[in-house]
Image (cartoon, rainbow, N blue to C red; front, side, top):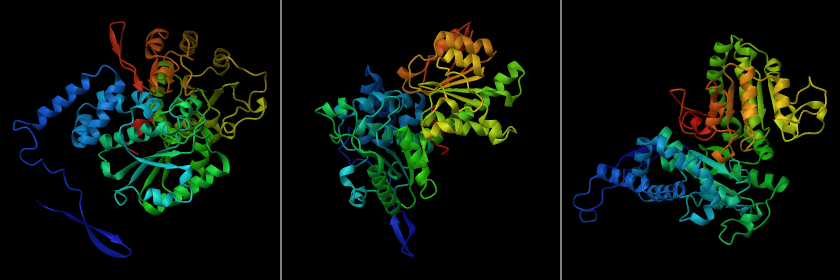
Length: 453
């Protein structure tokens, strides 16, 4: 057997270490005599497809990844469009809800508030500490649109890193899925006898920040070359910790920055098509957000660059964006509001509160309607038709995950715009037949930023 040594530096001294070796072939007698790797790939695929429910397919793929990771990633690459919805959205949402019930074996690193003061030792339990390059970290406080799931959020970290590996060719050994257990405010979890997390209410405020400071410091010491990706933190904490650490450590917030980058790319193309149909200048687009959480405002910050790249100032770009939250149109004179909303609060409206989405569409006259509210079917037929009346090619992006929380379906968007909608959703919808054509929905999910990022 050939052993490859690679050099590395440690305390100013160059040393050698053994490079990652391919898995050895089983010894004679340990596999059937007619075993063939290509036929076995077909066998594994048939076993997967024999499952009736996506959650059963998820469990099977988790087992396959544990027992034969090479086969798992080979099939992932070969059947990416089939596997992606199983290892990530929409199936990962169901996997999170059922995590404490379908749990088989440890996968990833669990760090709880009980480990405060001892986080260094917990981190050093990771067996591949010198190989780690990227970690997806969640505290389970805002999993997709499902809310606070506590430690049940771990499949999000696992699933996203699986896509990094399959989509970007990152070595599995260089990834660390991490779930921070700070408790949960989800009473259903706390009452579940099988729940795997701490049975206490969620820690917040200064106590959480002290914990996060220790965690980030110890991560940087143990893994000096590691990128930390924050995932599905609650809105306020998502902004807080991105700002707190972005100039000190290599960090990335997927909900704020990742979603924004993907939606920006979709909007650039959609806006060109819409402008070509209407004859409007590209800078004339008006974007209305339905939902003003971390994802919505994060996307809006990214979309400002759409306008500035086309010649507008930062102030002019901000004036092309409107927000709707649970109280209606977000505007300055409305009164106190969360800090992250203030930047986009309208200063040019001082009338009575506008609470209905149809009234706001009539007032704003948007060319693009983006949903990040996790309110299922919020874009009713009337809302979609109102967008179609205003625009020859309306841009409608219902981006909430999973599918059951999407603001509208692809079918509804097509039916109520006479097939003229420019559509992208957070979770996948099937292609549909309309007017003797097959129409394919776009998908504006932040998973598409992973390989490039």
